[in-house]
Length: 616
Image (cartoon, rainbow, N blue to C red; front, side):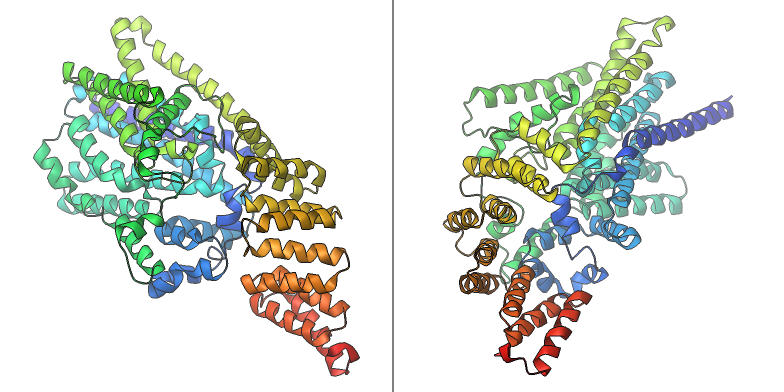
């Protein structure tokens, strides 16, 4: 009888796993042909660090690598991000090696990771329920429904789209995979009777934790959750739990150490607390205001998990500045009620493992979301991908609570189908919302039109919508978007830059000059604005002024290739052959693999050799 039951469980687990993978692929495979979006361009497409295997040898020249993005004139966060998340970047690099910067491959890997997370979640919940010392308190039917229902809800929930369809947010889904893998292998190490097998599972679990920490910093809370689940759900005595947790807690310094080393390298060898914070935080908010705001942000994540309507890539969220604001007080009270209710229910029914799992799941949500929703001010007050890992706890708590309600309200077997039927309806509804939301990501114009309509008072969505229009040569539609961005944020120099580019493309050179000059009031040393002015003067036929502006641009950013190319082109037109050759030589050094540049140099050198009269 026992062997029959075991076979049935294995068959059920296999079928459930295959079903989860098939459903996940069905929902997300249509997105494989979608383009790169938003930060995909900065952190992948335009990031030279991803495209070379030499980047992964950075520990050998740590100090140089920590500042390389600044020396290349790129976003300083590129090298910092790479150092903190090298394993995630390794997967991006392997995508690039396999198929270049083709979004299909990147997206396919993201979908596979998400499906694997759902399968792992299913098996983790089954392990927790089957290895618990209170496992006899839950029927196999309830255990199966809780595990599969939670995994299905996690798989199809539209809130996960930003961590799957948004390529660069693989950071989050990959770290979640290793978090779940750590938890899945942990009980196997504890249950193994063979010491060698136990040690092997333990090391696999610890290695999964380390790799996850090198994928994204959200795994800082993983040792804490291991302790909570082992003590609360499995029922292991506290002393034994603490002893088992030692190798996991020993990994906690990894992330702070990387932050400290990076900060020291970027600040001339110093690494005080203030400088450590500067590489991970923003100066837009104080830690106090940010922490107050996160009380309501956490509840906003919960609201989106319960009712996933109004999803938004770049949310406009109000900043809280006082503890006595009604929003802050109400949020704090609501969080206290949720935690208190879960604890009260657990204390009343300590013998039922479902109440233990319910409390553990509630704690999972609040503990894991605390990495981004605490006192460390991140650039955006709220971002949907930050709820990916935390949603596991909220969704599991919902399914577990639903099974408890079913058990109390329907004690005869005639109502056994109530929970599966409810889960099926819920999963179908979430799947429909996911398909509809994924379709918004089909193009950059669509996603930023949607975002700007939902965040009309935020400048960045308008800026990105304008860029999307401009990249599709829809310059007239781009103009009002950039103007709106400037109206909302007058110091946004990127909006002045792009508005100038569009006006130059439309032949409105004098207006483009005015736009660039207006932007220079906020950023006098901004290379792109000087470059735009050079293009505008060139369009007006004023080559002397154009050369001055372009030379200013390269003095600010010596590696700015477009400015060197325009200088080369102007000098060629003016028959200043030697000067043109000098500019092409600079570009050749910056782009050694560009065959067209070397051909241009050959032509210029030929003219110089023939004694061109304009060479001087």
